[in-house]
Structure formats: C-alpha cells, structure tokens
Image 1: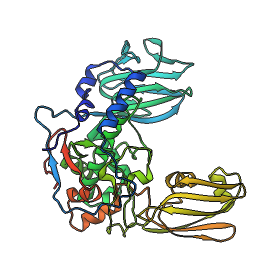
Image 2 (image 1 turned 120 degrees about the horizontal axis):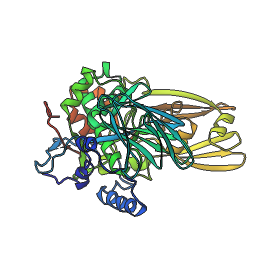
Image 3 (image 1 turned 135 degrees about the vertical axis):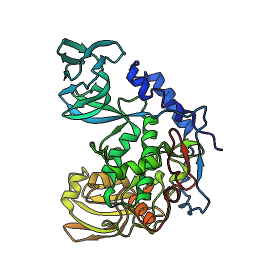
Image 4 (image 1 turned 60 degrees about the vertical axis):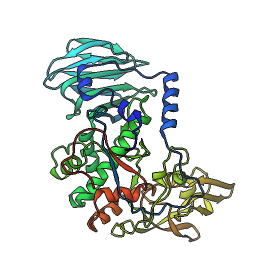
Length: 435
C-alpha cells in the first residue's frame, strides 16, 4: 500500500464540526508561508524532463489506496471566493444565528436568527453594522452559524468570511463542504444532463483532486478557489440534482495521487487527439509524472475538435501589447504539436511569448488552443486553423465522455489521462467503488 502525503490529513485540521464550534482565523506570517512553500516543494514529485515524450498509456490496473482507519478524516470545507471587488456586502444569518469574529479570532458580536449585517470597505479597516451596533475590524469579518448564511439572496454555507483587499474592496468567501462544492463544479464544467455517468464520476474525482491540491497550495491565502475558469467553474443552486449526486456519492472522498502525493489534476474541454505535458504549458508550476500527456481518440464528437479563427493584424498587435500591427509569427512546437513558444514579428522588432501566455493574451475563447495545423497570412489578417479547446493538460473532458460511451469505467478514464496515478480514499465510503 502506498504511503499518503501527511499534508492530505493536515489540510483537514478544521472539519465542518470544528468550524461550527469556532476557532481562530489568522493569516500565516511570512515565516509560516516559507515553511509551507518548503512543505509543498517537498511533497511534489519531480516532473518529467523536457526531453521526455508523452508516456504511453499503461494497461496496468488502477490501484485504489484506502485511507488508514487511524488517519481517515471527516469531509473538509473549501474556501470559495464567491464575489470579488465588492464595496458593500450584506449578509443574513440563518435559523441559528451567527457569531462574528475578526482576523485574530476575537468575537465581537452575534447575529440573532435571520438578522442582517452590512460590511463596508474602509481605509485599512472594515466597517460592520449590525442591529446591535457598529464595529470596526481589521483584515476580515468571519461569520459562523449552524445554518446557511445568505449573501445576495443566495444561501452560501454555515461560515462566510468577508476579506478586505489591498485595493480597498471586499471579497466574499464561503466555506462549503467539498462534496457539496463538487455539485456546483460538475454543473458548471460539463453538460451533465447529456454526459455519460462514468464520465461524470471521472470529473468528480479529478475536480475533487484539483480542489484539494488548491487547498494545499493556498493555505496561507484568504481563499482556495474562485468560481471561474481561473480555478474551476462553480455554479450555485445545484444541490438537488440526482444525476450529479449519484456521480459524487459513487466517488465520495476519492482523489488522485502519484507516489502517495496530491498533484494538480488539470483538465480541459477538448485535446484534439493528444494531451500534453504540464511542464510545457505551465513551466512555472509544480508538475507530476502523471501529467506527462497521453494520446486520445475519444473527443472527435466535440464541437471544438477542429476550428478556424481569423484576426486582424492590427488588432492582434493591440492584444499582445505591441502597439503596432503584427507582421508575422512562427511557433516552436512540443511533441504533441502545440505551440510551446511563439515568435512574433512587428515593425519594432521581435518578441517571443510562451505559448500559453500568447493564447491568454490573444483571447482563449477565440484562439481555442495552441494546436495549429496552419497559420495563413491574408495580408491584413492571420487565419488560424487548429484543433482542440483549452490548455491540453490532464483530462480531456470530451475525451472522458467518449471513453465512457465506449464502455470504459471512471477508473479507466482517469488512469488513461493520468498515467501512474492511484485512487486514494481520504474520507467517507462509496456505494460503488471506482473501477
């Protein structure tokens, strides 16, 4: 049995029960942040070398590593940034009321059932108004209750934190139990009503793994994930969807590990025929041998399997921040065929962009991927012919659906896209183990 990264258990230090009982909320100091960085660096397996080609798909059975009875943990809560750049925030307590505390954990007030509070951003502080009086806090306002707290008429969770940002605005962070959070992620990430059940299970495993890795990496930050593609898309209000509940229940507590360690289980819409190594797209991020790429013959039904896009050279220069029209470009490709770097020529000279930075600057919705079969020069415009949608790392979502429709199990799907990975059950029990 593979040993499991001790931080997998440490990340659950505040279970939902502990959160309801209270507890200090404090930002880690610089020394603690450095220590965390050292812990994270030590727990990530060395990435594939840049010369290593995509690993072939192994036919070895997927290993499932159960949690030790002595270390199995309760379901954790993830901190989700529900709203950012707010100037005023209104929260309403649930049926059990709520305790209010500041950044240091000092309790300064209590809301009775269904009472509201208003938080305004001040100069270096937060101004808090409740029915019982006004207060001034530094850092954040932390509200903890026994029933969901409401923000903008939407129930968030039993704990909500409002953080003061450096730019003088507010960020609303909901603490959501992770299995409930996954309901909103699956609803936001895939067309679940027409997705194959085993593909939904695979998405649940991958999204849970990604979320827990973010909790590990961002422990010193005010929140773990956002609700957009900056993390993974999260939509509220999907807690009663039987299709989603079945996929999440069947994989409850299961995450992907490599060598007993969490890794960032990336995913994207459509690979176009093969995924690529994480280090080629995200050279500044930690990687894993399980993120070295894999062939894929299952995403041809994606509407973005092949695409074309035309852009004016002047507009392209503007998006790239060149201030002048683009004259031409050439790409250095990785073994999967994607642009690893792009050399752009313009009147002022040349500029080299990392591939992913180029795509994000140009517009990732329009330039759907870095896998281009042709870039045609039309004089005043460039025309890109390409395949796939997304960064191309990790699990291909349309490919997972195609594999499921071909009779593959969720375990076979994640093993295909993350070679050498293992399924580790951190908490809970599943009604049907992932095969």
